[in-house]
Length: 411
Image 1 (cartoon, rainbow, N blue to C red):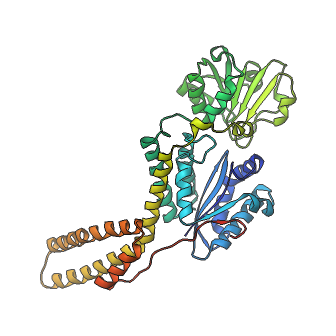
Image 2 (cartoon, rainbow, N blue to C red):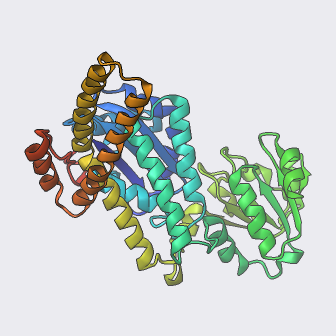
Image 3 (cartoon, helix red, strand yellow):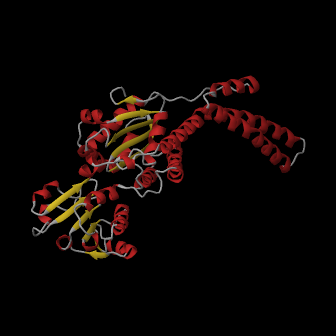
């Protein structure tokens, strides 16, 4: 059974998301170890959402949800009461639809943003590395990525180059008269920094420098053709616009020298810039909380086609999952018969060619029922398919079902 606990920009404060994002990387293993009800976990933590996707035992929803809240409360310093009020719990098919929509950028601050699909992929990769993923979660996340590609390829959401970085720069452009004359400092060398370089250049900026808190500035500068700064204080002094996108807090009030006008755009999670910096003369700060308040204007809304594609993909995936036990039962039945026939044929002197031909025939015969069974489930006729298997082959089974959505209180 699938379970998702989500706190995002729609139902939680930026401060709460920041604390969860900071705590998430070191807490994932604890989500699996905390209770026997959890078979696997993948955690997606970004600047605008914290989501724990779990595979759990039947009847284990309450224990698994409580374990997530307890583990994350301990890791983040947030009270369990505060977390329960902010987290929405999704079960079963709604987990599928939600993840497909999230991965496709339809639930982002900037609808259709480019970065989220990569963040989802990295969340799965980390779960693999940490050994917390499971078979069902692997399939779910891989199908979500496929759906995201379909949305970008076949709908108006794709190819727009939308991102939180670009939204921030749109807001900043009213404060920067001429980007070609602006001295731009980028603090960070990760994927967000690479996206920032491209977006700033698209606006006409040419005087770009980078500072890397992790020491990777030289490699980044060589790859993207950006000058490298090794002294942060000096780099800030020479900059008109500063964009931060690292995993560490790097700029406080003591880092600012002089009172020249500077625009600082903080894209980090957790914050890279102390909010108190706005008390200094000449400093203007755009952080994620401010940027989110200006989130998608009408032209950035998802198209109906994108929503329909996600809905159809989720329905198909859920249908396949629901009918899979019956198809597995049919395959087991057929291959058990096949093994007995091969054994008898071998006793009569049949060779490898006969066995190969029989196995190929069995696979061919199973193909059509498998396809028709999945289609029947998609059409809401899964039980008819199962009844047919029982009548024709004596194979018994039941549709796999998941509970629907519940809020955190009921979990």
